[in-house]
Image (cartoon, rainbow, N blue to C red; front, side, top):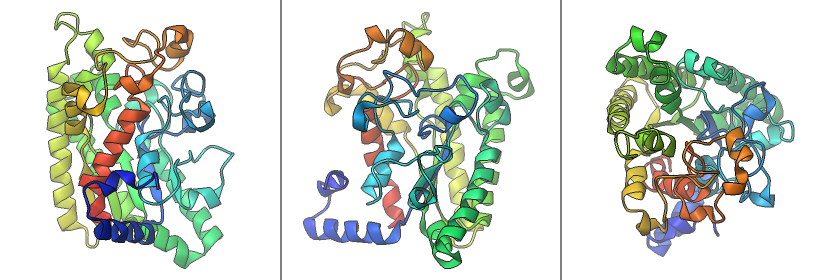
Length: 353
């Protein structure tokens, strides 16, 4: 029952029960591409520093174990999968503990620290988006061998394909290297267009491979991440408004892309899942959601640490992550992930039902 409770408060009982039955009938799988917001541990199996398969990460996950998720527990796509009547956690494609029978109902190809731009994935040697697509093609072959052509095609056609990526392109690439190749090659608006072009090509590739239900994710108010706030000394450690403005601009371009592609690609059901405004609501009015701390994270000092730095200073980590919006200086807590996931299901993904 826990996997559907969040829907019940805004639907009459009869509608609610119908919705649950319909969801379970129509959504056979959740298939995920992206960055650390949706990576369930793929980076554990590649040579990179962008990892979180160690304590205190995962302390509130089932069994209290680190999985490679950049959170104290589950991430948004785990909650979305559960809300759709599927499993409570979406496994990482590269994790040898799982096989195609697990992946048939949910899989993530995501890689922490990656981006739309190949140069972003090069920064920490993680899995670029084009390689995630190659993994997906291999997954389709395995799925057809496991289930047969007809049932595999049904999962591909009816499964929700979720894309959550883009923040690293700005914060770990464009703005991280002043005078670097991208910032000299493009104005910020031109770089947004460049990334949106990659997003369009990726959606078209998925469509060509049989995907019809696709969620293109926007970027959050990245100027309000603790790392950005606590390095904004001249701005009094408030949110970096220029970064938030870029997020709004880029999201607007993605939203318009979704509208256009829905007209151009016959049979596609493409939606825009925008986390920006629910994140801002949480940050501006935290008490409404039971939060107490927004400007620093739970892990270590909460100002600058993520990944291995969290582990090194773990004695400073907070005792109750549910009071914090952010788990580390870049990533939300499990509680925040659940709120955002519930919002996306209620406001956007219901269109797939």
